[in-house]
Amino acid sequence: MKLFDETIIKLQMLLKAEECRELPVSDTSWPEVSDRSMILRSDMAYELGGEGLPAVGCTLITADKSIVPGDAVTLIGRDLPEIRKDVPYARIALVRVDEDTLGEGQALYQAIRALEYTRYHFYPKGFMMRVSASRGKETVRIGKDALAGGLDFAKTGNRMISAFHKKASVEAVHLYYVTKETFDYKALERCAKEAENITKTIDHILKSTIMDCNACSLQKVCDEVEGLKELHFTR
Image 1 (cartoon, rainbow, N blue to C red):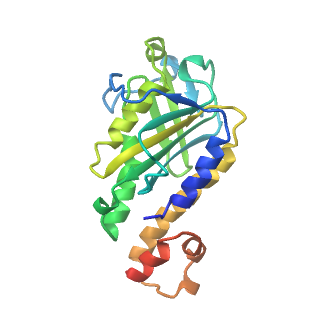
Image 2 (image 1 turned 30 degrees about the horizontal axis):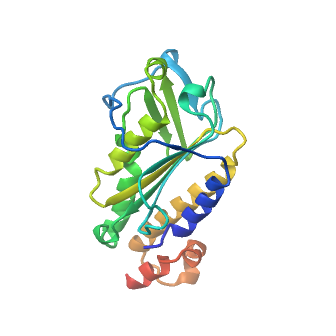
């Protein structure tokens, strides 16, 4: 399965061109809270991606071990305790899966969406994710008390990796957090949009009765992504 591999390679080239910090992996001791827990503006220290700043969140999957060798958390920019005000933000999750567990057809599409929806089942204390799928934005409110208690990207990152590993198909996760103000967030947004278009095309192929590629509005995506045409004609 190489549906997202070219997009992932673009992302990695963009991310690895920056100065990166590798954060500790495997500490899942930071507490979680109820999904109903809210951080009000009066209780937050700042917002990642707040006040109209870039706020990118995406999850891409691969079966290639050379792309995601193992669990990792990488930070580009300042860590949570070093931030004093709203900053731009991106969260990129590259998830390696056992291809044989994903299934085919509608099962494949649902498995991809289920991995993306992990972010809706992830509640570290003091880290309230706010997602606008229609606008493609993912912002985060950081609680004052949690920040004073030691919250940082290593703690929340390990919590998210643990959430992904609850899926039997997941073998490894590389999380990237970006807070650098001069980073090219527009390029990240383009990659995230490309990945979403690929996922939508998979769903379209499964549901569409149109077999003439020249009559399909998603022909360009199919032509550019290895595996989509194979999926189409296998169907």
